[in-house]
Amino acid sequence: MALAHEWHDGTIAALKMALDEGLDQHETAARMIALLGPEPQAHAASVVRALQYHPVPRPHLKDPGSRIYAPMFEIGGSCHPEPLGEATEETLSAWADALDLLAAYPLVVARLADLLWLRRFGTKPYVYAQAAQQALRALWAYPSIAEVYRADCLTRALDITAEAGMKKHTVETVGELVSAAKQVLVNPEPMPGPCLRLLTRLAALSAKQRPVELAGLLDAAGTAFSADPFNLDAVMQLRLQLAGADPEARRTVATDIVELWERAAEDAAAPLVAIRHLEQALAVARTVGLREDTQRLLVRLQEISRGDQGLVEFSAEVNLPSEHVEAFIGQFLAGDDPRAWLARFGSYCPVQADRDAVAEQVRAAMRESPIYYLTTLVKLNVQGLPVKILSGDDARFAQAVIDHDTRGITFWGVFAAEILGRILADPRTTPEAIAGFLTEGIFDEQVSDGLVRAFGHFAAGWYEEALLCAVPRLETALRSASMELGLVVYTEPAAARNGLGTFVGLGELLAGLKGLTPDAERAYLTLLLSDPLSLNLRNSALHGLMQQVSKQDAALALHAAATVALWHRTTTNEGGASPAES
Image (cartoon, rainbow, N blue to C red):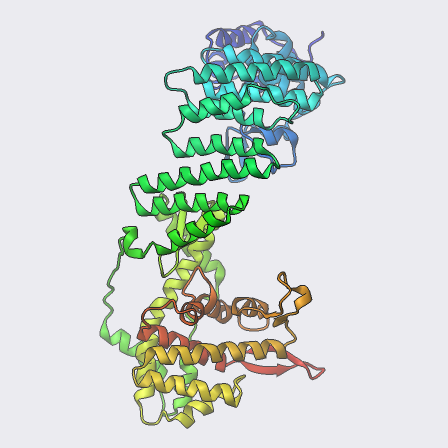
């Protein structure tokens, strides 16, 4: 077969010399680079790049090749090698040349032929599928390649049989996967990675294609990996997969998995690890429908107090010059009109309006403490129960932004308590003055009357009463404003999942006001009152979850009321209600 490129004898010799050393694919690529010298032929360099792809499953990608092979590294918008789907015709033809020139080396044949098959190169791409399939199977016996990668080669060979419709080769390859799994398991200390890769691929076969040995292999793997709950769970999950739709078989396997994680929780060295194990047991119990186990695990998780978790609280003190503090507080109390004091108080928003600036501040903090943000984080509520498991860059960044804003609100709470205390201590701040301020905006007389009492409770030092009096009335006002703006505040029975009509929650109400009220103030109210990943005052207070209400808590609730009091109705040209202004 004629070659598409001119290959120097020295180039071919260098490639073969590197392959003759019997190294793995990445070491071979490095040797090729060294032997080819600083200015290799372009088509020879493409052979090196082919060996530098990593076999990493990425099923979410559209390109078939990129779903299977990833570049060696990706930084920002650049990567090396290029994504497989972007390889040029010149590169593909160079791979086809090299496949002919280096046909005696399974290592390079397996990679080049698979890449060409995935790109469906040439008039007979099926030929590349056959070559790749045979070479990948041969690599199981390649001693210099790590066992886990050899297992990947076998599973990829089986995938190719499905892609190319190789029924005969399917049976042969399944048998080789079974033999390979047996070889791994007879080792005194079998490696879980290769074994689980092989067993997972076998379990994914249709019921007709699955080998009869699979159940025995899973039993052997369960025994071999019994000391590690994570590996044992992986084996049991495969057993659950094999159970299919058989409810009794699924319940039996699921019960074993639940017991596994409960034992692991009892043996866990750290309380938070035990909680995580119990959550994994709970997830299985819920998925399979083990109602009694689900109820029991929920009770166990709820019984774990913050004191039992071994958590360490960190605090820090910041000393601010008293003259700066007084100057800041004093600006709220300028003049002699208490309604103006309350208006200034309510106009302060502790959440920054410039969200791009917040994002940059958060990213800078993440760069300063990168290790913290590389781990999976568990967000706890005020009772110490897990609220959310944060994994992945996007989830950690989103929570870091929430934490940044929450710290700002908490810090403001210290000042809010002092400012409000001074406003209410002034004899000019009468109930009538407070009512006059509140009724200038969207609060009606009935809501305003309740909020006046809440301010009075705060002045008397009854902070719990102030909070519990303010929050429901604040929600009433927000619900009324939403109705006036034409937003949905009630779900009809026909639209409800359980067939019962219900009012939408406060968080949903606030979300509906986006674009209709000042964004920073709406974000502040959401974090303060209803976001379970932030302060969540409304739900914590009204669900009986706050053992003690602080002066700062009450001050923030009343500050929220003062903020909403500054929202005013505007009208459209047609005379209807339009977004509120602050």
